[in-house]
Image 1: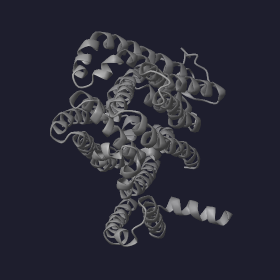
Image 2 (image 1 turned 30 degrees about the vertical axis):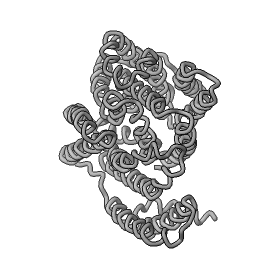
Image 3 (image 1 turned 135 degrees about the horizontal axis):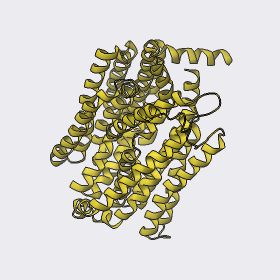
Image 4 (image 1 turned 90 degrees about the vertical axis):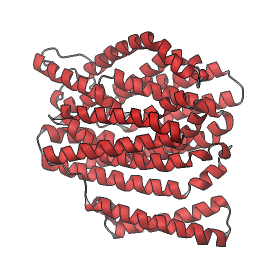
Length: 496
């Protein structure tokens, strides 16, 4: 876990730097200078591009991770990087054709409740292309165990580029047309930065070794690629929410959902770095048929994801009311508090249990995941249709939560039955007990200490977070929830 730990820590720093910038941008720039409808426009456009790019990728990202151990040797990569360019290009070509054919029906879906989106619908293919290859170059860097810079580009660079666009538009220095073009262009710039970084690593060749790529290897890659195209839907279920909301309730409420979901998304930030760097190691262990190592890695990854995501969610939840109270026009967005809680639970489930999806996808039983993906996709579509009608933006969050609960229950039942892989440990139960007690302490603080102290809302939130956060940290350490964390702290203490 040494390489994983180092790269994960660096990736997490990049992620949380992005979170800090994103926090400022989302809560003090977007809510001040953009309308709810304009916020909803940017969210629907990005989510649509991310969904389309994940399908156009034809499973390239996961294929690179799975097959890189087979391709690499001490001197060459035998063309896997070249394949990572050609497969998405073929997928994007198919997407572009489908977009031209179905453009009018898609526009009809949004024309009534989201007319602003219809004005900029023509930019989606360009934004999709940028998102597609930004992800491809990022994955190429991750299999080389170099994820920090691409993470900085994704989490920090794009937010800074967009911040410039938001401020220029907010101060009436550019038109909305120019703003939308700049917003889309930020992803193009990120794509180019990732490409330049990949070349800077050296030993990168996009030449395809035709002698190494035998017919049998190409068939295996082809089968896996088709399968992972379907799997892409499973990884992008939350994107359905904004697309359904934009069509059913309009861009304004989608804007409220966007602000609330950003808060909940912070919960799974560690998953983005730890997941990206742990997948190649898990893929290698699966390839070597070392299921003892797979179990050990899976338990460690799942435990630490669950522990960190639960603690982050706890800090968010005890401060959610002060947060909405201090942001500009907070009264217009406070209706998203329920989304924060529901979607936060969904993010905890996804971040801590998704390692099971990785294991299945890297194993020879990967095709058995197709029925599970079909269940997840269909339930997400059905639940969004049903729940948004009756519960509005909370319904979209519930759709994600219920879909995840069903999917991961079926997935991990299959993993245990077929591969005897069990990601659960006593540390997760200890975490639940600690958070439950801490929620009780937060309730008691709000009932008695907050009225008695009568502090400024920000000062009160900082004090409560410091005290309860210290209790949480002490409980995790003293109860030895994670032996790995305790060992790291012990080594750090010895160096002092």
